[in-house]
Image (cartoon, rainbow, N blue to C red; front, side, top):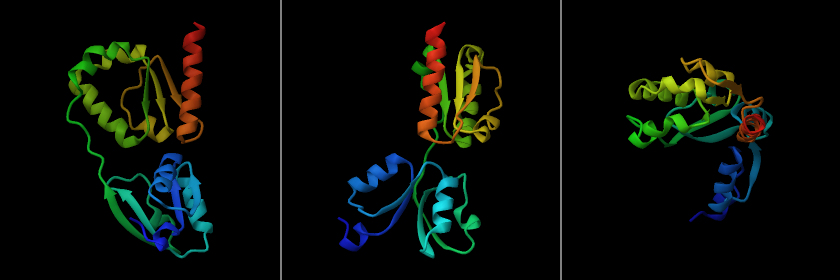
Length: 174
């Protein structure tokens, strides 16, 4: 249970789902909800607060402390995303049925590349549309032969969904 002080602590979050979870946990003072780290950096930089607690995972793609030297950042690792060691055999058997593959991080792209190599599924890539959150994600993937290669115009979940909608529209129009 959160104390009243904790419930009223100003929160800056990345992503609507994080904001939703924070509200569900009892936090009432969400100051800024950014769609990505760069947007959050702008909010934190302009914030009147001088110190922040940064709850993060073990693996991060953006270093807030280095980018906010005029602020005090107390980084606390609160989760760890563990990669699977191999693809599920059912996924391997049905991989040829996948129409679009979405990748949201450079780390995920590198992990997927290793899994794909070990599962020997790259022969299916020319029939699959690839959708990446950013150019950095795309550049992290060694495979460049896809039905189509798509990068969301803005690194956000909403932008990914809009781009996926466009991909599906092209498929349905054929």
